[in-house]
Amino acid sequence: MRIVIFGANGPTGRLLTTRVLDAGHQAVAVTRRPTDFPMRHPRLTVAGADVRDPATLDGVVHGADAVLSSLGVPFSMRAIDTYSVGTANIVAAMRAAAVPRLVVTSSTGAFPYPNRVDPPFALRIVEPVITRTIGKSTYDDQRRMESIVRGSGLDWTIVRPSGLFDLAEPTDYVAGEVEPVGMFTARIDLADYMTRLAGSSDGTGKTVVVSTVEHTPTIWQMVRREAVKTG
View 1 (cartoon, rainbow, N blue to C red):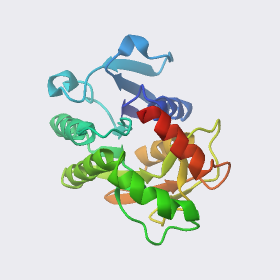
View 2 (cartoon, one colour):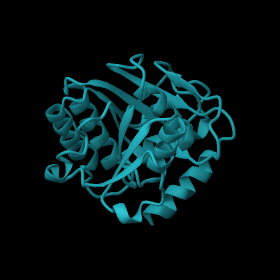
View 3 (cartoon, helix red, strand yellow):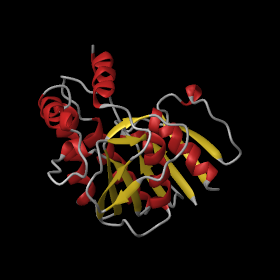
């Protein structure tokens, strides 16, 4: 398969590119700064484009079998529209190129999950604060993005991870049309699951979650990390 990856130069996007290549596919890594992309591979093409500029997307998705989007921006108190504007432009480019399969990353933080399995007690305290303060702009725009994807007419899947953190290898994660477990998702698990979805019709027209259930950090470690990012 030829798989186009948007947000390829981010922490999740780089892992996603690696998983796509490890699975034997051709990868097109799309980034605004192609000369800064750290990977080289015989089956990898690095394409310079900006999802906010639709003119730069001409030709990027042509010939693709699937498009994976791991667009992401740090939490901010300022207005965010990268998810919705970027995804709308990706959808338009896919329609023009007759590429049907789209998998996008959203977040469980954008929607309440009252039946979340094994949530830590601290989540009840921290999540409402984050969704109303540093995470509000992000989650508002992710909801707008999801609406665009659902109305796209494409063979879409929306993947909602929880709090992202780093592990070296994929775990025995929980994924699918299930309630989230705990409150964390390893980026490598998210990348592995999205790669699997690219070549599968199981998640078409569905919103799914992916949860990591081993080697997870504490909620306070995550809060301190986000506080440093936005400080």
